[in-house]
Image (tube, rainbow, N blue to C red; front, side, top):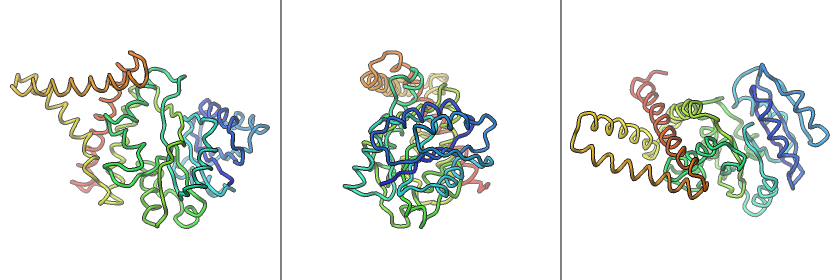
Length: 323
């Protein structure tokens, strides 16, 4: 099985260097790498070409259209039997392709996604953000499960694979951002292809380096969930409302305390238990008091930023029908 690894890139030369350094170490070597520079003003051509002696690597520069269409460009140029998409801020374990190849030979999937976690070299904030995006105490816990309350598993494009057959019959991404990976996954499923999680196809995902950047990203994710709903109305499930409910609960708790309402004590106890549970779980997983403490803030940001984005576009697009 020959893999084509497709990496869209926009103004992140240092990130692509670190990712490519991990691909050199792959145990399974039947693969090519396509780096699609999406109209960057700070290009990485020199860095990418410096890996030509170590990898079967191809650099392509195109006008800026967004990550979804940059991946489509890569699909068009790819030679592989199977396409794998990575975000440029990922680090890939040396056994990744070997694990994927073995899994597909034994239990073939037309499209797959894999989990992510923090690398030991990540900063405490990056580890806290990674915790929030993968924890069962937030909606992040849904992302790494083959079955969940949200229904069918949908691969995320930071770590996603599709067969050439899927590309030839379904095509690629039809929106370039705002939930493009979930929209694509739903179309693949509706075309009758088999989608699943490969638990061993793990990557180390850096995500954002500050809480401010993390807030912006999760607010965008909340909006993306509503954008997907405009394509597939029946995909909006009860679990998708949890961040909005949590956000409203935080607002109500603050108001109850300011107004000295009797229910404030109950709200405070409930919130304290929830945050303490996050701290204990994050400490157990990271063995770090600092990361556990930061994980409380990361989890609150993950839920409230997503919640505000979700409510904003729910009101604008689904209630007011503003396109």
